Length: 362
Image 1 (cartoon, rainbow, N blue to C red):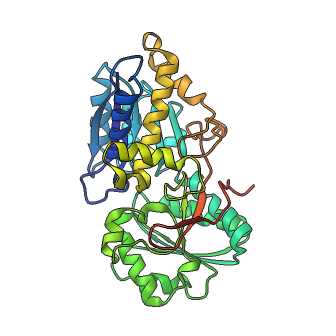
Image 2: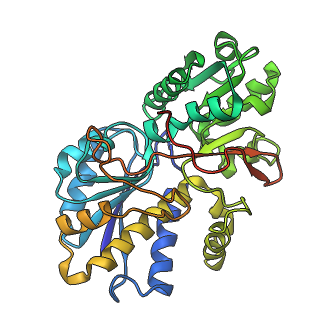
Image 3: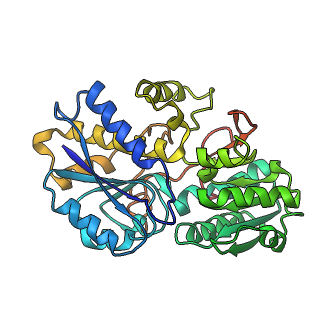
């Protein structure tokens, strides 16, 4: 039994570091402790997009050319995702953790378990209104394919609840972000929202400190919660509030985190457990394997497996308790649309600031 694994990595922009490692660990766990898929070992056939749109075509052709591939799971992919789906032409189910663009949600053969850039960022508006009671927000984002659409969705969610938003973009090559922060009115805003991939997190953190922004009013996505960022910032993450479409392994109040961390520890990857992309990829593979086992090896054609995956209603591993694939007619591939917000207090301590999962504004 083989799953294709697609991710954008190896190029100048790597939006989801750790996803491949999380997916591989899940496959190892399934094979060594859960009996594989109907007694057969689960293997991953990997294909990576570095920087060109046409590489998505190559990956789709690779998976279609391997009759053992029953479905495709993905890491973070922005570049190449359009050509990937066009070439795949619905012939295999695609299981996505968090989609970076709006392409995946339009696909009938996709199942975006944890949500896409629009869905998982929409709860920012709910959090701003219900928890922060914010009136003004400064959104500063990196202008790159994996972030621009998400920044627009984020700003729209804030506007929907009556928050006045000033949104300013900056080039991926920019290192001094004091100018964009000032232009967005960060100093006087009730809520400051930096939006970057891991490569830009250190620059935005340094610039926020230089401007003197109170960390307590900074709310962002979880891309900065990777070891490389902590290593560049004196060994710890910025003490901001992080939105995440899954659980946080450091949250001791969540009963799911202890067994999850135990699995990573058993396989010598304890440090990887806190990586949000590894966490989501682990959940993708585990959920897909559940569907494969429920269907049975002899009945595993693409259409049946796709139906089995999309009919799953949750709870999701380290994620939302409720899924509803196809709930939105205009977004048949979308299954999850909830996020939690955690305030980071340093030295590995996270506090749930939202009291659980929040959904988009009604």
